[in-house]
Image (cartoon, rainbow, N blue to C red):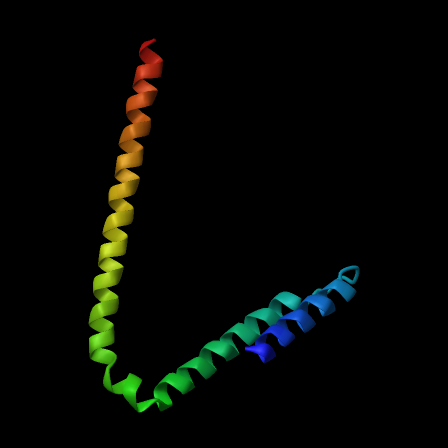
Length: 94
């Protein structure tokens, strides 16, 4: 944990020192390192026997959580849309 915090502080200090420089290729570097981190995460997950053997269970849970989350978001959006439309009609009638 201390190592992670130290790396974050080093990144903040580096950003602070380089804030006046125009870093043109930084977006490309960030994209590359994000892809690298995702690849290394996949390698780590693929190498873990417990995770690989429980993928069917985890997959089913992930699908259920996703469906419930999307359904809840759609329901909340519909409720908000209905509420806004109702108040807009009341405002127009006044």
